[in-house]
Every structure is written in structure tokens, then in C-alpha cells.
Amino acid sequence: MTDNQKKLIFEYCGWCQHEWDRNNPYNDDICKICGKLYFTVKDDHLLDGNDILEAVKIMESKGDWGKFYAFYNKIGSRPVVLIDRFIPYLLQNFFPLMAEWLEVRK
Image (cartoon, rainbow, N blue to C red; front, side):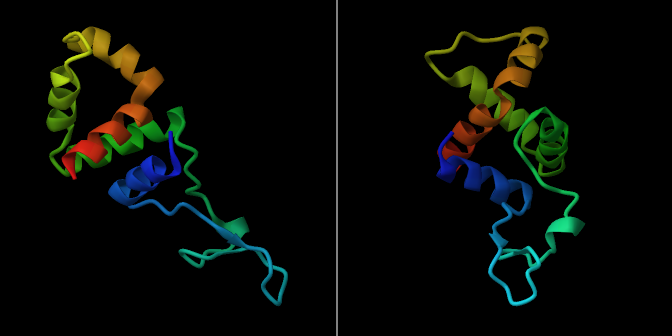
């Protein structure tokens, strides 16, 4: 995934893509974006399996889960996938697929 695709995901989910300011006068690590101290951050998102469930919940709360599933099945180069086969595939490819969907729905 590109940095722009990751940015789309973070913005959609309301997550901070932490950038640490290691040059502050007190030698503390402070996020340049949200201002949190490094040692207090418990929401560091690596876009791995741990974040998929949270992202899906956000999609559901925004009413977008069905749109995402429908988008996936409309892509011409992919065969229509039944939900029982979609879930295992999704677990392996969720964030690249989400990024692709976010780019198209702009």
C-alpha cells in the first residue's frame, strides 16, 4: 500500500498516524499530529489483523459495510465471492481492499 492509501484509511477511521517529535526540549516523544506522549499511546494502528475488527465496526457504524462488500463484488477482474469465501480472503487482504474502495468512493 502507498502512503496515500494508508492516509485514506487513517482519516476514514479517525485514527492518528503518529509522527513523533524527537527534538522537543524535554526529550519526550510527542506526536506532531495529536500531541500525545509516546508512552501514553495505546492506539497505535499498524494496519494488521488487530485493526481489522475495529475498522469493520467503524464501517458498520457509518453504514458502509454493505457498500464495501458490494464494491468488492462489482470489480470486473474479481469473481463474485460468496460471503463464506469472502471472509477468509478479506482477512488476508482487508486494508489494501479498503484503500482501493476509499479511493474509488471519493
